[in-house]
Image (cartoon, rainbow, N blue to C red):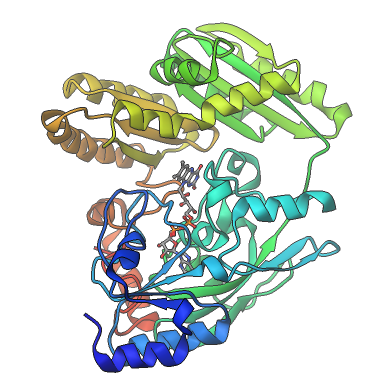
Amino acid sequence: MLSAAALADLQQLFAADALTVDAAECLVYGYDNSRRQAAPDAVVFPATHAQVVALVGVCRRHRLPLVARGRGTNTTGATVPVAGGVVASFERMNRLVRIDRDNRLAVVEPGLLNADLQAALAPHGLFWPPDPTSAPFCTIGGNLACNAGGPRAVKYGATRDNVLALRAVAGNGLDFRCGTPTTKGSTGYDLTRLLIGAEGTLAVITEATLKLSPLPSDKRTLRATYVDVGAAAAAVARIMAQPVTPCALEFLDDECLRLARAHGGEAVPLAGAMLVIEVDGEPDTLATASEAVARAARGDGLIDLAIAQDAAAVATLWAARKALSPALRTLSPNKINEDVVVPVSRVPELVAATRALASKYALPIVCFGHAGNGNLHVNLLPRDAAEHARAEHALDELFDAVIRLDGTLSGEHGIGLVKRDFMPRALDPNALALMRALKRDFDPDGILNPGKLLP
Ligand SMILES: Cc1cc2nc3c(=O)[nH]c(=O)nc-3n(C[C@H](O)[C@H](O)[C@H](O)COP(=O)(O)OP(=O)(O)OC[C@H]3O[C@@H](n4cnc5c(N)ncnc54)[C@H](O)[C@@H]3O)c2cc1C
């Protein structure tokens, strides 16, 4: 419950239509795609940097937890206000401040939707590489705080690789700018990269200067099917070992193909596994590039390799791939969607480990995702309470397997609430201690997104 004094301070700062303590409204801002929920005591809708500075001041004074929120699409409970307090929803702070074509950058407010940014950039012949499947309904602020990625990360990198500078307010009340609008910079510690992936636990981001890339003139999309997941996983390692870097290299196992076919129609083949491989560039380079990746894709266990002949065939492949995440919910409303990552050469071992766990725990487990980064969405699909209990054990062993393979817990979704307690397995104890020290410096009262990321 908010004290009368805290409520009065918030009312000083936010007009009546930018502050709510209504229980029903608060409830919907305490929910995210992890399907966990907790009610905040108030929700505010900041519109300016100055308002965020003042808001952090109020929260510090009253020791109120403060959770920044984009659109709540994260999968880890990162926006669930487990300690109550104030949720700051950035949905009204969503301006595209400017596009600077000469310097290939855009300045944006955190509440801007990823897809709205891409639509505004396209007429300038530019794009921002992070392309989460949730782009039409997730924000740049959420992308920054989770270090979001997507299929294009294999060539262009994830969020952390595509940001030049930030403006933010730390939990200790200090507001600051970090980074520069230049593509090189070697002036002190890299606070920009530190804040990216910090899940709103160190500072609240109020503005970002994003590094843009020129839109490639054309693309070629290839589809390769294999007798089994092992053969496809081995092809991934071969493709990534040759010089042409694809702009997407997605993997779908047999179960995913069956689902994708149900959603995408007969055009999706049935096989032991499939790779969707895309190359981009100038039109006269594409024949050579697609031949290079095709050569690497050929090998033991290949059933068929085809180049999509028209835009409709490409659209069908991607629509089927992108429908997978929601489609898996129909099989298992309580699915556990992990996004573990391993070195690319070890993808075959990761796939073998998930198969072994599925068999050991008699549990449906499917794999798909960004194989070119070694980043697979391993989905455990329990259908009843007994399977759910077994899934928890399987998950525990999956994380052990990933760490044995020199991988880590998350490639793009982040840690949030649900993976927090596994952090000591993934991190050197001294590295974890340094992270805790950083948290204390940035947020000495622990008001920013408490209970997340650090165990
Ligand atoms: C169908 C579906 C598909 C998805 N596909 C992908 C995918 O391909 N790749 C991928 O990476 N993710 C994917 N996601 C996950 C999710 O969309 C991303 O993590 C996204 O970046 C979250 O954005 P959001 O606006 O919803 O942020 P939220 O969920 O609201 O917040 C996420 C985190 O960001 C913090 N935050 C938000 N705004 C700020 C701010 N201004 N300052 C500081 N911290 C802030 C929050 O506190 C929280 O810790 C998918 C989700 C769904 C539902």
